[in-house]
Length: 272
Image 1 (tube, rainbow, N blue to C red):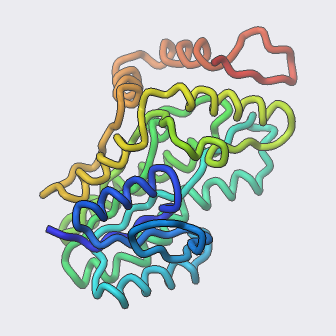
Image 2 (tube, rainbow, N blue to C red):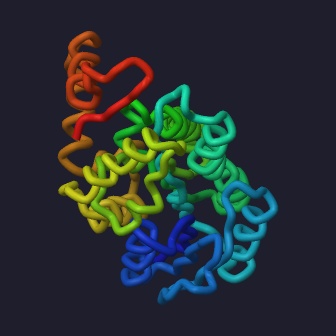
């Protein structure tokens, strides 16, 4: 069965691969980007800034005007901010949560009236292993993804009686071509060093963006999609560790893996 799908952040990386794959499988896809003019894609591209209410409502209205319905919303847009907590300006914390969490909320809120009228729909929220376990120097990102997890879980039980399914995609670190722009720092030498170490880990990651895109396709085409979809061995390992390890052991593991114990006061470093 073919669906009308809207995907935020579809000009590169996981979003682009997901949009292409759904298009190839016969779905009518609308991708979005802040500046779609330069995007080369076999599907329709629309302008969208997820942090702007007017832009969000215009994109949803355009899809409905052209396709007559909206079956699937994939909230994919976002980025990953690194830096020590005290080095993160409040404005950057707000921007991170606005893009990763409130952007999804804006799009969902705008799409729901149409889905309720249809009596059906699917909302797919791109979360992360960072929404299951918060890592050091990644608090703003973790806050945005933990918020998305809780919102999605609440929203699913709210919308199931209306025939609307909410699902979370939870990949581990992905070896994607967007690492240079999707991983950002809070600024300064230390923040950039932490972000660059995260990019280095991403370049060596085993999980490919195609695997994440396939997980989204499974949600779109499933008869009754689940709430959570762990993607990749790292994500499954993290979920297992959090479930089974006592809290003190889990904390010790995280510190040993990601924080050096010899850093001088006032400095921060991340193990690779």
